[in-house]
Amino acid sequence: MLLADYSLTSLAESTAAAEGCDRSRRTVVATRPCSDSHKRTNSVPLDLLSGSRTAAPQPRAPAGRVIYAVGDVHGCADLLANLLETILRDVAQLKVTQRPILIFVGDYVDRGDKSPEVIDMVLRLMAEGRFEVRALKGNHEQSLLDFLDDAGVGPSWAEYGGLQTLRSYGVQPPARKADVRAWEMTREQFLERFPSEHLAFLRGLELMVTYGDYAFVHAGVRDSVPLSSQSEEDLLWIRGDFLRAKGPFEKVIVHGHTPDTEPFVGSARIGIDTGAYATGLLTAVRLMASERLILQARLAPPR
Image (cartoon, rainbow, N blue to C red):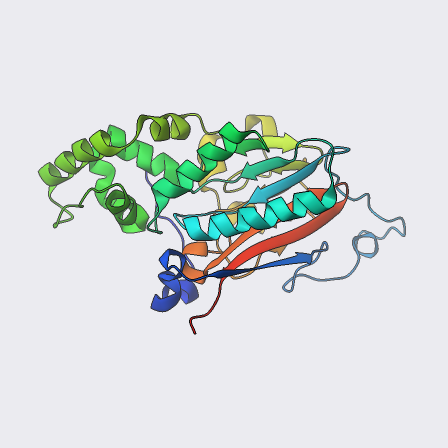
């Protein structure tokens, strides 16, 4: 079932920014360490909040492994290419002996104009073997798959980024949103143009992966449900109930789905969707031992 998606009003109001991920401007990258606090959170140490003077144990990645988790790309292939260059440079300077883990939290498609290029990029990474790549499913991938099965999903999917995806595969959307027959013809054209390897990629996407003290999902989790029993709908679509939950969860949840102008790094969750399609900012987090580091690619302002 296709549900209403979410976007920040402040992001959508800026037309120039919303077009940013598809421009051929150079990008700048940034790295910065992060702690268990965020500009909007109380920075009182966790041990003081709990009444204990013993420092709370820090979440850890598996021993000897380095993990990079990439936020929602949404068809912004240029930003992804630059972020991957930054990650490769970071790996080189770390001199790690084990293959680094690269996790995508989903939403490769929609909104931006280069969804095919994004999927191709992830497929190449899988084939090259430099990283242990884990690709998660986002709600936008599910919506695309739903459309391939049912043309009636088309109008809703189009409203939340599907138009850009159709055009990026060379398919023109119907002129009238309510034209049922036109949407069926569009679905048939899309099926003809959609590469079989892209379809296999989407159908093989994972819902959750765990490493060390971290669990990686697209949207979030329901706090009253064990991680092993989470529903697919919640993993792809949950928002308010998850964001309002104080935690702790079974593991620290690393997720995308809910865009903000900055990443959120807290004791219970790490949110890495910075609305690349609207802000021109794509974010990843590096997890190594107990360290956390934010890496970003940002579109440079036009000269």
